Image (cartoon, rainbow, N blue to C red; front, side):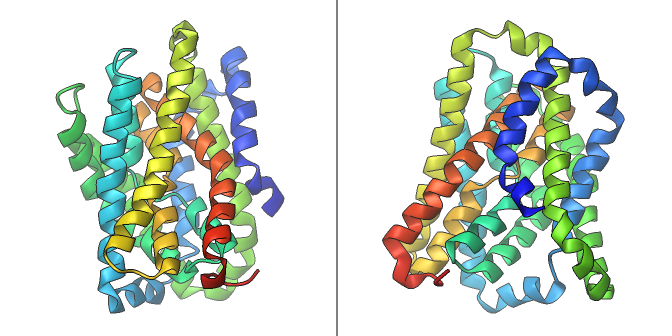
Length: 313
């Protein structure tokens, strides 16, 4: 099961050409897309416990720094690289890049922090808190940053996020608190299920926008890749640099760096489709592939530089 989820990038890469060639395979999934994503967020909630979220408040500086880097660096980087690479192609792509940066941390960040040997408890707590506050911050940031480029329905974005993120994650936390023994039995299957669901979501998005995607010039795909690559790398860098400037220890810097850069691209994909259409979701699709391709190399770099500060694995 774990091996299946390790290759999310590969399954996404395979799903894209299939969806472009045979969109009819994925288009019937339209009514299931939001429930599918909600179930992925629910799965994340099942890995969280109320006491883990509460423990982070004992160290409020870590919480504040983690929230600040997540919801300042990533949205602004999305705007900068969206404008540099994507504005001349289609403003909706800029909006999609910003929305990707304005979404909360992706579940995969917990896995990468574990593999790095960083502070997993902090990673899990920050993922939960980032997701809980996202229904408020994501719509506001998106509206402020790209409201002049494209129309942004802030209320609809907020309601979508409440339904897709806030309610499922709270239900997941509640179930994990009420019946922890039963939840432990299903936890090994959650990464594989989440991977499968994300691939289906990406497949639908590509299928729904296949005609527009195929009409894009070849250079657009290069620019989409570059926008996501620079967005990700600068996210890692600022997610590390800001905590360092504020005096955090290397282990916490690495944790926050990974939490900052690894975005919930599945959520961004669904929200972009709901807000503007399938074309606007392409930055999130590219980001999903890029972060899962580059992430393992960043882990190795962190362990090379800060090996003595990290848990031996």
